[in-house]
Amino acid sequence: MLQFPIPPICKIMAESLLLPLVRGVAGKAADALVETVTRMCGLDDDRRTLERHLLAVECKLANAEE
Image (cartoon, rainbow, N blue to C red; front, side, top):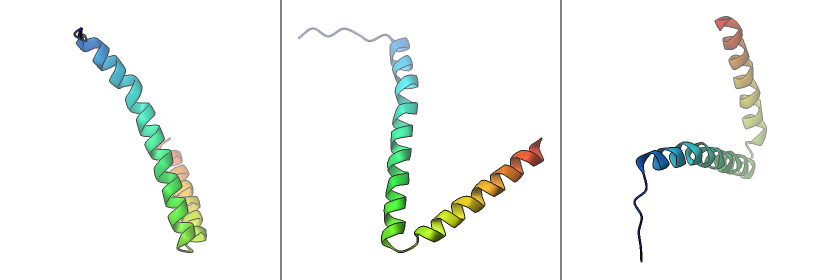
């Protein structure tokens, strides 16, 4: 079987394209898992409340930075 060397720039390009995709997929899978576990444990309402509080804090921080 013939093997051709892959130029380093191609490896870098592949990593720069694939890494964000893999991170995005892994993040969505983790979010789905957290939602499922919190629902199973009866903590879904608490999780949603915490998410709303976190969003409010992030908005206030963004405004403070301006």
